[in-house]
Image (tube, rainbow, N blue to C red; front, top):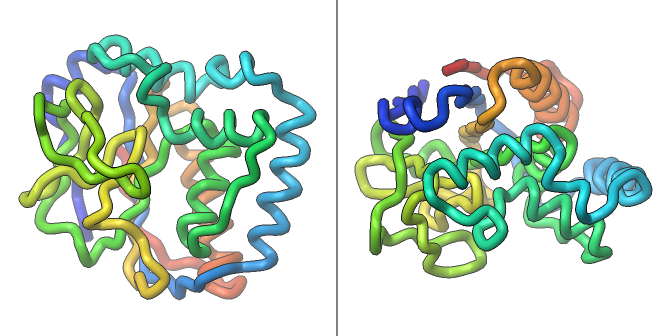
Length: 222
């Protein structure tokens, strides 16, 4: 089971930071019509209920943005992934399917406001450690190339960065053939709603990656 370590510097700067990790075997697929139907239904309701200027005030998103400011990063230029997904919907830009596991994680982010790291656990080398990005640190963000992660919260394994709340890294990304999932739910607003996000994750994992069977997953709270 993969454990993570939170460096003291980020715990001191972000005292309300709490993290949940979920690890489990999965049966991933290229596309789930049933999951996509749920995503589209949620999206329709979300667009009706939110304006663009409302997105940054969703509690979990607001807390992540505040953490960025404390660390010295502009959240308007480097948006947390959950905020970017929500803004995309409200701006009328359709989401696109990646694969079932990634689509599922995106739905959890949309429903909770948490930025969630999703990784192929078999590609992580050693214990992930959450720290703060450094000047000129290499990070190949999924679908966007080199990302300036200076002053961003960043998880590193022994090779380098694997994830930030803005984007995950190409090296450890979830692919269609991924069979071992590792998720990190990042809460900068305390534990209040974190367990709800974990429960939602378990429900969706069982429904869409285990064919309705009970999902056997490991959880850790930090």
